[in-house]
Image: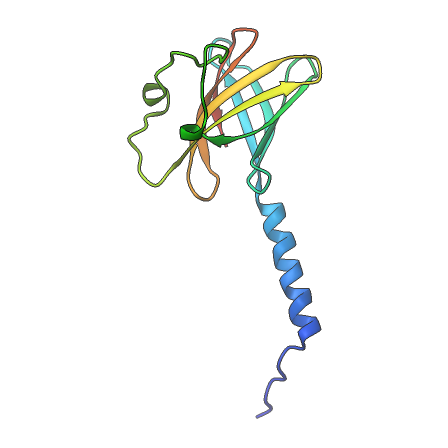
Length: 140
């Protein structure tokens, strides 16, 4: 029997680089926003690595933002979720989940805010509200 030669350090570095690149690609997931009134769907992306969400609105405007943990966010009177009961909206009884908040803004001034919950692999759901008084159920 012939013994296998150990990987060279260059080969190991190349394999590690490839694995890291694949992880970056795998960390971007599609996001779907479904309008609660009309049923119309919007699409976007959720990047785990950058902690960002980007959505294309029906007007053609792209809104984007970086999310934070819901517990680290001050949702004040200027928020579209001010006074809302996040527990009722998301069902905050689930354990081992991350709860977050994001304010998406567009180049034409549109605002979309979202509160959500996700597992450690980045799959989740939430509720979004727009500055045009629309509300969406969100899945990713």
